[in-house]
Amino acid sequence: MMDVSDEIVRRLAVLAPESIDVHDDSAAHAGHAGAASGGGHFDLTVVSAVFAGQSALARHRQVYTLLADLIPGRIHALQIRALTPDEF
Image 1: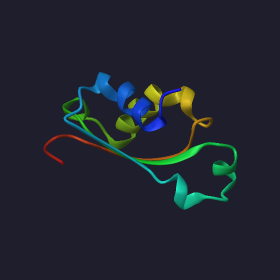
Image 2 (image 1 turned 90 degrees about the vertical axis):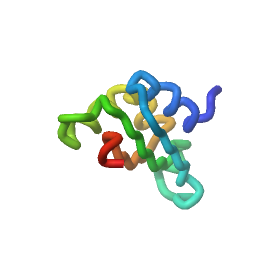
Image 3 (image 1 turned 45 degrees about the vertical axis):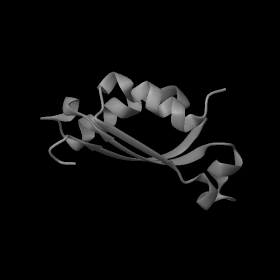
Image 4 (image 1 turned 120 degrees about the vertical axis):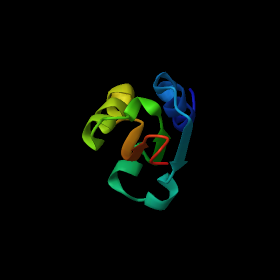
């Protein structure tokens, strides 16, 4: 089975990102109910020109759509920063 961070990067490749940073914060949440069920906590920054002209909500929806079947199983919590190259 592919590491969740690698799977996130692989799936977001369709956004033609200039930069993707995925940080697994799961260890900091040890003992949390979501962590106990195996779901990880991740902090994601993705930079893509695709996001130009989109609201923050629309950007997050794109990311969630690409990762939908991982939530809430392999991903319990996901913090997203979706930026255009100019915002980065």
